[in-house]
Length: 288
Length: 275
Image (tube, rainbow over all chains, first blue to last red; front, side, top):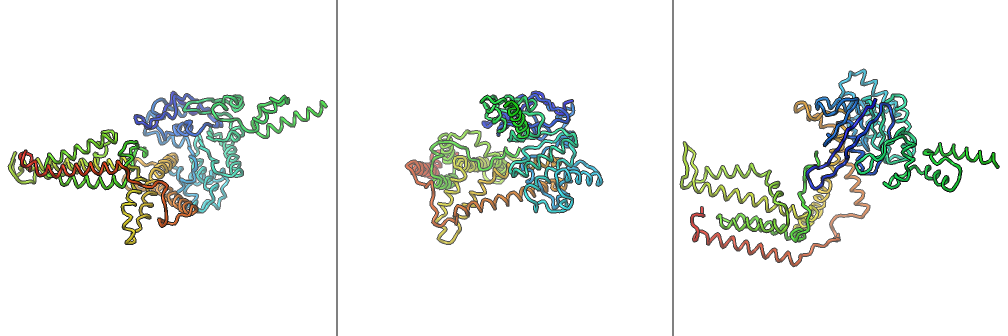
């Protein structure tokens, strides 16, 4: 069953002024329960606007959003409930920390849900474990932590609400490669263990290829492609035309294939490409 | 939703008024205010209104903008009008119990209201046609004689410029933080006064933290570019008075003279319009 569904979803910024801009234009989408969806697109392609509709932060100009089959805007008093169902981690989430200990900050969401003390305690510790924070760090002041650690705290703050859908808007922006791999690895692990539906907005085709199962490509306020990773990256040419590219390693493999090497050009991760090259090379040796 | 707030009401354009020297615009705005207060009767005030209409037309600011700038002063205008109407003594027009409305009262009320409206519309034109940066530039240059008595004119102007520059940034930041806290279930729309004040804490703390961080970064960036205050500092865009600045000064003075002349002529020609 699809957990998030949109019908003709449209959002117009500053309607009726000279600055009017259609951010998303008649979007029809279905996101299935439990999938790991990568969302990609240029700055201004509408991806941030789109994800803010999934937890009711923006009200559609027209069209509908359904979460778990329920129309989100049918009853405005229930809106807050959807925010707990669909957890959204913004870009640079470390700038939203405000409490004096890490523990209190992570418990802000669960407290707003009205859970009891024991449940909150469980969830905070569980969320901290998922993002790789040590128990003794929970009593620290978040402003004393490093940038990467602050970001983990902020992500834990959303995970602690145990949402059915977790949306992360560029969770690795501004982190070094090591920090990026760690956070994405933990997110992947969280997805596997919790069976949560996961949306990952990213600029990096490499990251999407490596972690996501499906990809949503946004271009100029519309859905450009929405399919499995293999099917999306098979459209290398069209992606190039809208200024996006396939992962570097795929370009290498495609180049090799064009030059007449008998490799499968559809390899999107370094690991896959390495395996493929080894296979061809070994095969080549055997023939020689 | 916070994006709808306009601060620094600059309305971009390329009219001669927009291109005027900000110093001249500031001075002429002051002259215009003096003109409004010198106008002692309807006819001479009409000259002030005519002047306003003409420069709004030249600057191509939509009339809608005048209404927008007048909105906040409507209560003051009404208050002034009512006070004048009831408390100015003279020939009674209408009487009921202890309330008397006099002919002089009505005329003063109209005169005062028009004066306030013109005052706001006139000064708004300055901010509509001058970018905040040009405005602070102009203020700095006009106040520069005060440097002689050790007033930190340049520093004050720089502070104003930085403050103006960061208003939109901070609004955007507030918007982002509010969304982020709402996403964590923060409830800002319901509850009593105390609860609402408490709900602001998760927004204000991150906002302050980021404001200090930005200030730190900006100070560092300025020092890296060897900023050391106004002493010996030159400008990329020098303010220079152009031909049009002098023309407009002349026009304003002609209008001022017209107002003074009409102040004296009207009582003789149209005595019923004089209070």
